[in-house]
Image (cartoon, rainbow, N blue to C red; front, side, top):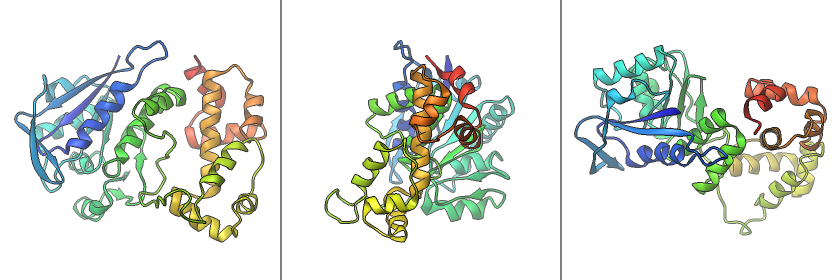
Length: 315
């Protein structure tokens, strides 16, 4: 079974610590078996914080040494400016050297950076601390706008709730879109947010604004199989293309056509996993038009082909 070690370092942010525990413990195979073994691997006498204040002690049956054989190590947020213990640095470097996946949530990126795991890589952290991370670690390409960054073996997320997006992304990479969607339903979380989506998103109450895009988003989902242009979407929303793009980015953090592409990829993945429809048929019903076009987008955005994806996750 895939072992996920969540490191509880002193000053750990309580919410960040709970996120991977909740997501990975809630993930199940189709037959109901747990998909992960989750270990909270704690330093001695760990104090958990909320909004920078000490709130409670963390006690776990696992110590940091119990993370040495983990397949995935996750560093939740900690108080920035507090250098990690040399033993923690060695643990993370050894994990990366043996090929384990290493991820951080929020200010956990400071710990990964201190271990040298982010040198020469793009990384995310809480937007309030992005400048500090960049100043302290100039070899890290800090992106203050995105929800998370997937560098393959090393992953980082933005602040607080973006850790949910990162953990669901890892479930999706491990077990496919259908399993990730099932996990998202259990934790009552929408599974669709992509890593490149912006941290700053407006959420007006539905129906209180003439610019609300809820009906347009539903219309786009209902017409995935139809070739849609930006002008088509703007006409449906009764806006100019310029106004649509501005409102779309404000409400979803991305562009209309990128949002549409993400939903088509999501639906194609689900159909490849859960049905025996041909690749040609799936390409048509998801709006890609041809297997060649769908293969191009799978290769570019998922690093695989539709047939290879089906072989890995079908059933």
